[in-house]
Image 1: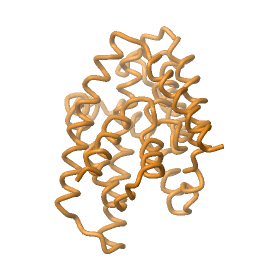
Image 2: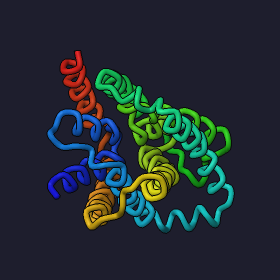
Image 3: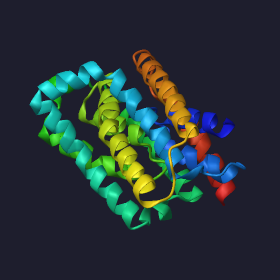
Image 4: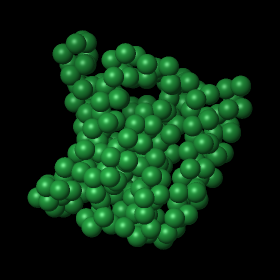
Length: 251
């Protein structure tokens, strides 16, 4: 029960802010006495985050679905990471990236990238300025987020800021692109566990979905409020400190 609450907090908070949820989950399981709780628990946590972002952006989703141009551009931007993630998972290459040294260096390097990207004074908005070129650039660079420590939301926000989008709309692009990613992780994970392994859904899994949903929803809400008033420096500082501590421990 305690493990579910802690993992839900980690997943719900770090999935949507630029600090890398995968690295925090890996660090937690490596440095604590908890085990990883199985693939189904991990899937349950991602389902909670998926439901939260869909509910929070339900109006925008409806609007973008009706606007076929934006819908296709967002879908296009999500395809590269889905294909790459599937390949890395099936070949088990993803496990070679889950080391503390890699996480530490990526946490620091992409903290600096986030810092300099956020210096841009762009004011582009999704509806008016997202085009095929921007969609392809975001989608291809999005692949780097498969490396733990990079941060999926962080890399999307950074590149979107470099392309001229406002801080809020850069975050919205990140949130919207998380929907197909979280859906892919969730449904592929469910297939793997329910049809291939012997794991079964339990009340603990349902609780993890609920906890992750609540924490994720609140994180999205307050993160958007925060970035309307402040820059990304607090996340940059946190990442730099965390990265240095990880490297000191790893080496």
